[in-house]
Image (cartoon, rainbow, N blue to C red; front, side, top):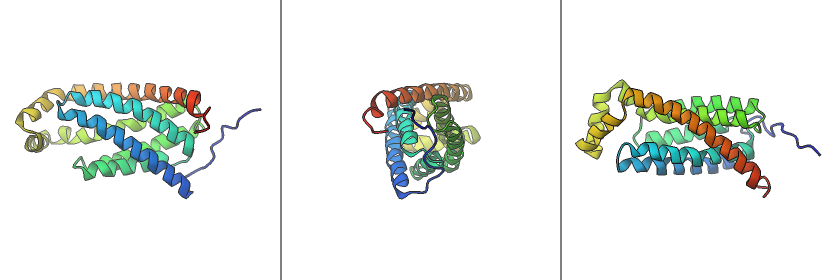
Length: 202
């Protein structure tokens, strides 16, 4: 007996689907925020937090795709998380950028029928790149950004941040983040198929 891999829905139309996306959005933001909080100790710890949240959210997003199979899930996830980031004082364009990358991820995962590992992993990897957007003010107006950071975290922290987050480092981190997120999504798909599908969760 074969199992159909066709998507169950073409968009976010049912209230149940919206609730499901909301649950996974809450999980995504929790892991992302928890990872980001490591940066309080030292700016370099943001990389550690980024690795942890990328891996955990890879599993979260693969579950979301499996449970919803709906065009627009990533865009909603990105919009809500982006708005939460803006509300907590981050760059205003983060929400817009997250929605755009979310829409791209939606298109990619839909093209793969929501079940193809390579498409799901690529979608998540591209979506994850929106996480660089809070750093854009550092590139656009570094003096103002660092002055504001100094007011919030202290001059020593701002100086350390400036030394750590140079343009080459940000560029390398984008590449690393993409590769890491792709791998995390592949891991998430394996966990999904090995455990959650057997349990009937996905």
